[in-house]
Amino acid sequence: MTAVLDEFWARSGPEDPFPMYERLRADGPIVGSAPEWVTTDYAVCNAVLRDRRFGIRPVGDPAPTSEDTSGNTLDLGFLDREPPDHTRLRRLAAPAFRPKMMAGYAERIADFTRDLITGIERRAAAEPDRPFDLIADFAAPLPIGVITTLMGIPDADVDRLSQHGTVVGSALSGINGPAEAAALAAANAELYELFSELIPLKKARPGDDVISYLVAASPDGITPYELHTTARLLLIAGFETTVNLIGNGIAALLDHPEQWELLRAEPERAAAAVEEVLRYAPPVHSTGRVAHEPVSIAGVDLSQDGWILLLLAAANRDPAVFSNPTTFDITRPRQAEHLAFSSGIHYCLGAPLARLEAEIAFTELAARLPKLHRPADPPIWRDSRVIRGYASLPLLAS
Ligand code: HEM
Image (cartoon, rainbow, N blue to C red):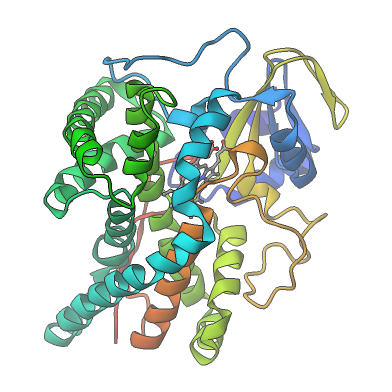
């Protein structure tokens, strides 16, 4: 193993990972040694994600069919499944993310956004010198409000859900030690109970929401355990990622004041700004795949069960694909699709929703809080090497 790779595995969560990605890139498209490899290369990431010889689970490692109550693992529903189970379950959830549905969600998202900004404005008027936290006061509650609506979760359960969903969601970055495993097991049990209360209600009175679609398919199309894990996947995928798209995006815009000014002057650029944030500061930095049979790629021979870490965030700055890749430019001409939402059969199902939420958030924040800026108080990065975003991002509104 190279010294750079040793440092790569040993790095801490909050550290800026991009200099390390460039050092790895200098060592070639794929680095490491059997059975564990790492790539920073766009073409390799994209090829592996689209290649059916790679999968999520090792050959002969069947997906769980009931809950592991130890809290040491987190079953991520169809994100964790191979075809044909993956195909069947993804198809059941997909109707909630169709373009027609997005048009219906836009108004709700705009309402949530405006209410949250009104709260920030009120507090800023009372105490103009006191920073607010973009994460706690805006970027976290917005996706929680949106996903719970989309799932048809009653208002009374939203607080309970968001508390447990946050604990479970943070396990996406890995479980560090017994205390986290215990907290995860407890939160998982609570979510299980909550969905157990909700499912019969949806069976009795179906709504136009994703849990009702899944319930309508049971028991023949989806087992009770799968129903739970699918509901949990949608909940936490909606919680833990969009918050960082909004946080990373506003930070990038404010750190490049000419880009913020451009967005303010030409709000129709918001959708392009979202794409550039996804490329430049993506919330999910990596995913992994395992070879289901021997595969040769970019001069490296992977044996069956060889594992490759795909650094999506590094691929998004691959100079062979994106010109001036370290420049944040919302007017960037489209060169290639970034990999922030992955690629292939596991391409993010929630991508249209995340894009819509961020576009509305950027537009409204730029219009209503034009003087937004960073105070002296430093931000706090999340302690994760997979999900990159702020735990806290203090800002001043005027
Ligand atoms: C900016 C926000 C988001 C980002 C960056 C993001 C990123 C990703 C990535 C990278 C994957 C694929 C992982 C892999 O290939 O191993 C994924 C899958 C997925 N995402 Fe997202 N996501 C976001 C928002 C959402 C939202 C809002 C939802 C739903 C409410 C969602 C639901 C899903 C689901 C269900 C999958 C699994 C797809 C499959 O396995 O077929 N995501 N997401």
